[in-house]
Length: 191
Image 1 (tube, rainbow, N blue to C red):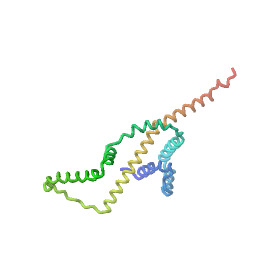
Image 2 (cartoon, helix red, strand yellow):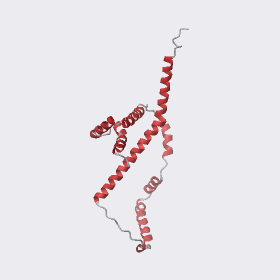
Image 3 (spheres, rainbow, N blue to C red):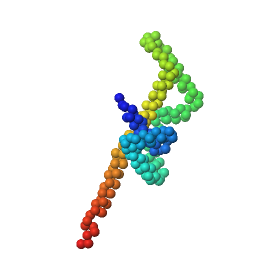
Image 4 (cartoon, helix red, strand yellow):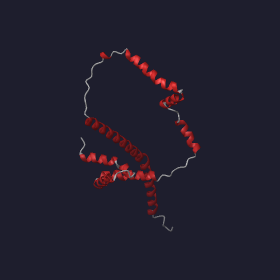
């Protein structure tokens, strides 16, 4: 079981992207900044996320010709099953479009007419209060939000590992080579 500090750190770290995008409300932002001021782990996470965020923000926007983008979009424009079905229904005459669902319902009713419902096992229905249902929905929505945030954080971590770290290594190597040149005593040697 996690202690409250770990839980608070997870909550704060989930909010990092929202903070950097300016999406936190004033009270949330105050709590966020207060926690980051006291927690070195969250400060590190915020620092790394800010480097990535600023790096992405500073990337140039490329101007691609429409003809190049059109070729890319053609491959992704293949309609899916439901889109193709929708196009088929729209292309049908109106009387057929409205009679088709009625025919399907009638066929289903005839098929179920032979089904003996009395042989089905009786399942006791549990009654839930409105408050229990509301609490379950709130928990479900919280879980979905958490999974979305974890997904975003995973993208950030992958970006850090495969984008930021190699860039930092390259910059560090460049800075080291400049430092090596400055510290090389043979450069100022008049001989």
